[in-house]
Image 1 (tube, one colour):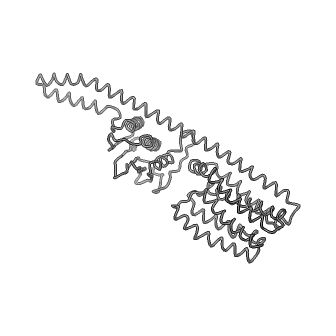
Image 2 (cartoon, one colour; image 1 turned 60 degrees about the horizontal axis):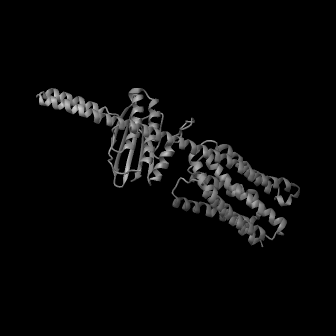
Image 3 (cartoon, rainbow, N blue to C red; image 1 turned 180 degrees about the vertical axis):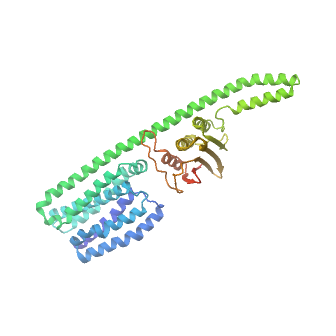
Length: 423
């Protein structure tokens, strides 16, 4: 019945791969990720299966970390979008869960299955798909959101899971397999029981971080909406006031023209134009987008920053909630960057225009010379106070909801944020 043992090991290796790929974030598109994974991991799994057939399960169990774990760790580290704590925690999580299933089914088969490997095969046949179902149904969506939104605190969790993996691997196979050391079995069973409890604690802590992130995002969005509505009300008040004043301006202008004072009328008309140009925040017809631009235009004026707006949109219906969020987060980041510069270097521009079925947005501002961002990279942030640190990920999220994308980079002392959304 050794064929059942070998098949169960092959099944386990294959599903370790599936479990990890359900949870990690690849730097490449899905098709390329699957292709590269098949090219690398297929031969690696086959080599380990051949080693199992030639050298036996006990020997391969002792060197499994060297023959499979470390090569796959290096490969997926290269493939992963994350390079630090998030990646190592995800990798160790998948491997530890798989090793736990392998250890449990091995002990069950030894003591309950008469070492016929039937119970081992059936157990792994059922438990691995069950673990993957739980990962997809309960874990994957919030875990992906957590990886996207929370950058700190992963190192400690990664260290805990790595130690658990080493602890399980060593206790399972050194100096011989644990089933040949019955005196140490109670300790090993306690380790197996403690691991799910530890993971439950870790995930509870992560879930609280996720809730805190969502709360901060909600507070930020509500504050942006409040600022937008206040700016809109202010603009509407100014417009009503201007309409009221226009009656007096028209009467005065008519009187000057009737008296033949054309020069005085021209001077008066120039004064009227200056007053209209001074009307705060008339950048576009869309009231929501205009209110957002007006609010940040005032903030930029407060820090003596030169601001240029080129907004080529009309009265058409637009997804203003997402667009206002993109503009607000982008201009908030610009304000923060400009505050670090001398006043004569503070400048920013905003462009919005259509290109076929897309709306293109570019926010360009001067930035510190030591800030260097390659195209497609995310800007590092040191912000820790509430309400900050989510700007660029929030813009990316809003753009993706509109079937678009975001990119940012530095060029000749300027920081450029480009957003393309389908409208």
